[in-house]
Image (tube, rainbow, N blue to C red; front, side, top):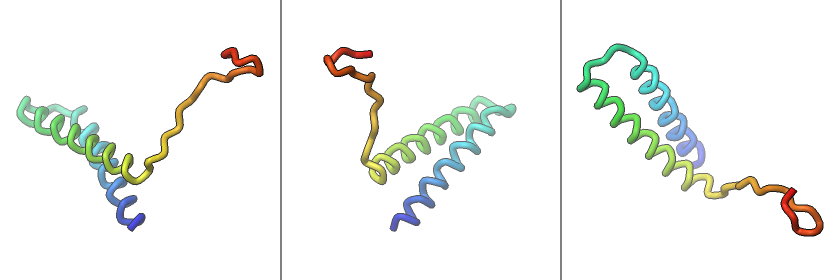
Length: 71
């Protein structure tokens, strides 16, 4: 199951890279809008999949000294 999920994540990342490369080329407005929409869909799918697969998130907090003051 994890292998399948990681493969799906890789596929979304590859699609995102491909769409970004395409946006650097000469495109008609119709083509550009289509690729921008697909790029947004791929990013959303990747975000959802990674959030479900890796639910832990780490935040960076400023260091606090022994007195409780932020350094």
